[in-house]
Image (cartoon, rainbow, N blue to C red; front, side, top):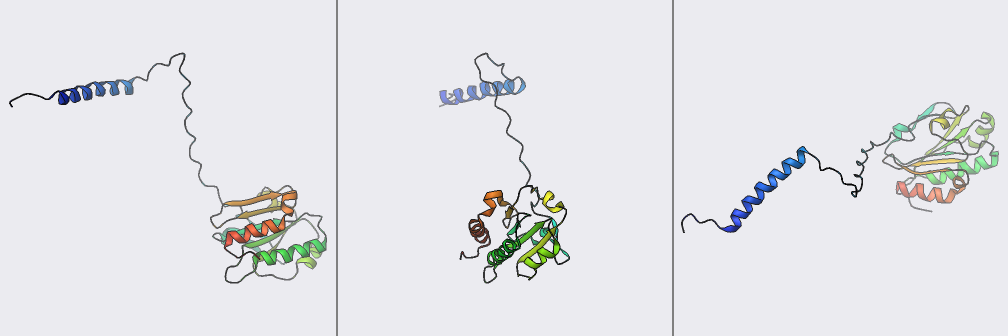
Length: 194
């Protein structure tokens, strides 16, 4: 057959040569915009690095000492801040609720921190004086911890999952939905619903 070249091979070579020169020219010079062309799309946003642990604070405890919530990372954690004007009976009921949420067993619930902002130490100790497994009773007399948690409305709840992501953040009326909050908190920890 000799030196005959098939037409499709020749066309392929010409196409590569043409495309190669076109590509290098486009890389060197962007095409000029036309009046009818839409504006170029904005660049995609830069990836946002994961936020720090949203509840990585040290909380002073009502009975003395502190609890560092960052040390409890890997466990669902809930910080509940009652209304500073809550009655002693309301605070005692809140302690019973927190005990039910954190209740141990094969699949315990999340760690619960009840954090009183301001308030009289003795009145709080009367309502929260009995230790409960899985529940910490915090006291924030000047509101410094609440400020670090960006809490400025009461009551408030922040629920964080095992990975440190905020699963629930509620203030005011929504934070009074204790049954719904408890179900969500126990579901995050794998604990059965009551």
